[in-house]
Image 1 (cartoon, rainbow, N blue to C red):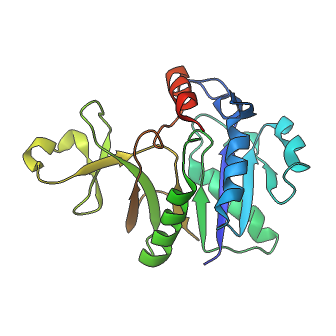
Image 2 (tube, one colour; image 1 turned 135 degrees about the vertical axis):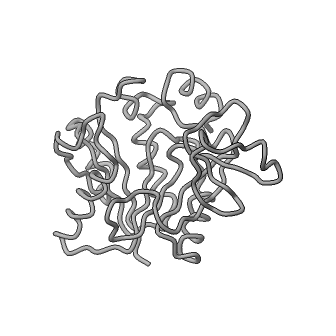
Length: 222
């Protein structure tokens, strides 16, 4: 299976301004993701999609990574990740590079482990799902819109489902951005069809969306 790694990093995030490019223990969150992606050693190609022209200076430092300029029309707050994935995979296809799946590594999960990513890739190869997502065990302080039934491996609208009536089963929610893998080609790159899931625990599951997340992540970063 040929696997491409996509690292998306746009500017002007709202909750935490330019979070992908914040200094995190000496390097930007994006650069830590670039470094991490190379450590995995399971990717046939690594591509970074960004609208930040300043990032292109990293080309010399990481010559084996493709830095793809993302058009403004797909670098907005409401741009679905499917558009970003499609833009990157179409670019590679035009270069004559075809892949069987795309792994999404978002810069806001700097505590992800190489072992987790390798485990996810092996599971994806073995189970042949339409997608794989990292998930975190549901806790009492979490109120997500969607949860995942471990028994049935399916998404459930939590607002229409009484978890307390099904206490014998474990439930999970999407952790954020540790890893997503999608089969190629895909019509919409959404969590539809046959799914596979890999559980991640705190602090690996931290997804940086605000200053509090950033402070906590820095405490656990090694």
